[in-house]
Image 1 (cartoon, rainbow over the protein chains, first blue to last red):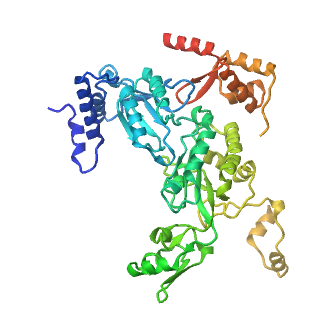
Image 2 (image 1 turned 180 degrees about the vertical axis):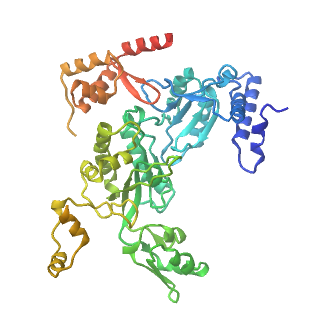
Image 3 (image 1 turned 180 degrees about the horizontal axis):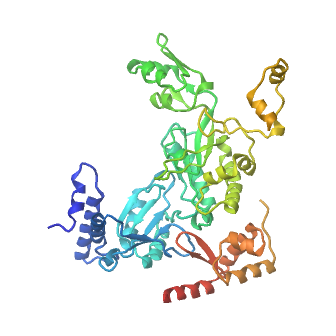
Length: 430
Length: 79
């Protein structure tokens, strides 16, 4: 009889299965041992399956986390995992995770990947996850005593790989592939991601804030890294001015595409019109909300406007229990060539403020809600702007202090004529 | 950005505190009534000189002297 009858059912489905992959690793480990190769975590893949089976039987996890696990000079990047079945399954008693800082845009050479895999087969379980929700390469399972030599071997690679963020620090910044692969990119996402990663090495490796902080960078409003939903500080490409139209290419699309049905009617603000006779489209750019649908459908004919840059959205997070919180617009537009400097000018005072006054495990968005949008704008040195909105086209953050209000000539005239306003009556009563 | 400067006396004060327990920069600055950025700079310089070191709880990084960390770890190992 199988040792793992419950797990055996998982690979039966049509989808790729982690059980199948762990079993493959177990077979490879056994083969390597027979060949006399040195394996640092012998039998760990098999033991991992046994522990998982026990968790299904007992309906509870057998992982414990925490403890001091790190490499010299770093406070984050290694997540301690211990099995509470250490006596029964000593092969997985220590099973720490290492987060490895991925290259911006997740571009690798096969040489780099091979080197990394060699290091991990030498010092760890050989199991990994490409990529975790933070974007890092997640190396799953090693012992405390192998962390430092594993890290040192990663640093000797060509190119070297560094450890990513974890805990209450700056998490590994991530970016979409940007101009390397995408014609919609409104700025160089890879360059900005690299720049922020290098600039904030201390913040990345030494957790010291109230809680985690994530930068995610998308080159256009398609937001392929889900920055607006998953990062405290989302930098999302956008443009000013008109969408560029190539009417000759529109005519080519008209040969095989129903532009009226597939593009015009699906514009959320009805900003597009199509002249079926001339086979030309017109866009009312003042009503465009950058949904990207028309550009995605007709990439040869439509391109983002020429004046490009990014919008900064603040405060998103993606908790499992309460549901996702979407970031809100903090800075409507920063020109592409000013992004590196402006992002730093905004984020550094924000970190100082949050670090001084934030509560333990309070994300920066929650902190701003608690302290107020007015204070937030003062800290980042921005003037209020009608485009700083929480929900598009519903509730602007615009607010006024009483002394900033000017008497309305219309209201004064109506009052003279005897019109009574309930809101004014209430104010007078107060 | 203006260069952060400090006196030898400030540095000595920080070093003394680091030899007493593990600290977060924020708390150390509060206790010493010094600017957080100055304390950060002093601690980083002390790390460069090998007179201070990092100590991680797994989720948070603290700072102390190597002597304190060594002793603390020894006590932890003894239970």
